[in-house]
Image (cartoon, rainbow, N blue to C red; front, side):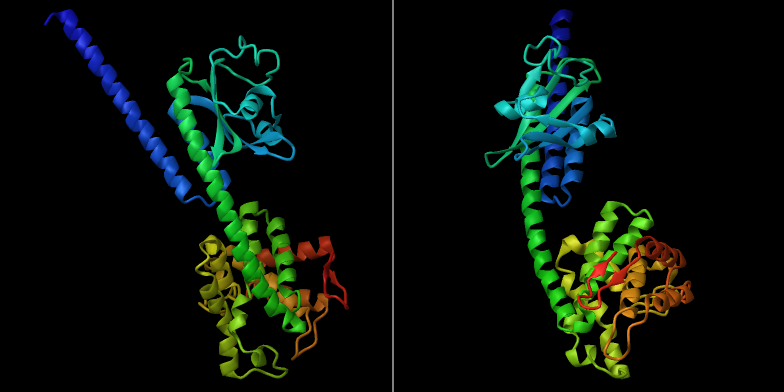
Length: 387
């Protein structure tokens, strides 16, 4: 075999190896995305993962996933890499406009070699296409159009290929499955929450003394969380916990909950079990995992003298410490069979006295600031919370 022939053979083998390696990487990418599709819980996080993985796969600096708002007939960015936050927040693309709108209108994948020379986009595209070449694909599931995935600004400065477009179409198919799964999961989640919330309302309404208790506690807890600068994700988890914090009382006898006199030791021990009973009821609802530990610990005290676990200080989940203040304030300002309601001032004085013992001092102070800002008050007739 001549040296020339040998070099050609080596070159062919190297090309085959490179192609096989690329196929392996693509299979690994699709496997990773399909795993995400199987376990999707948070849609935006899943879409961001796809955008990141797609950019990595194509060695691209910019990628975005836009979902369709059917009523407005426009696309909104739900995940992106390489775009400013302001662009992500403000971008709205009408069907038929720009690259994404073209894909949405014609429902076809798109490869553009040079955006400035393509007659479809040269005069009407204000988007930044640093390398001029781009690819985009429609996202479908079960025949329904859902959005568009775009990739551009290849770091190697190379033009995108038909092979690149085929891979993006495959990624778009997986994105469609994820969006559909997330939608079904959300519907199921809402159904469970409606059912469980109905149980909580049943607990509140069977005793007129505690009517609207969960609603009030939720409002206080969310206000405290916002005052302390918690993220919206943490506030959402706290909100669910506050709505459901007393669900375990469904397993406590009415004669104990509404007893007008002092509880016996045995009756008090049964009351104290309601946090653990709530955990047991909610544990099968895995989407509430973040809320369940808050519910378990909302009667713990900062000094370690609470229940059910005797946790102390920062060992108590932060959101549970918020709940402790919110729950106690509403309990103190609500009339009960065994005592009159405290005035707002009396209840606030009690919270101040219990800072560092029953309550986390920083959270107690945050609640005091909320009260001064919002001027909470109650209608004597409806007990609806007003600000």
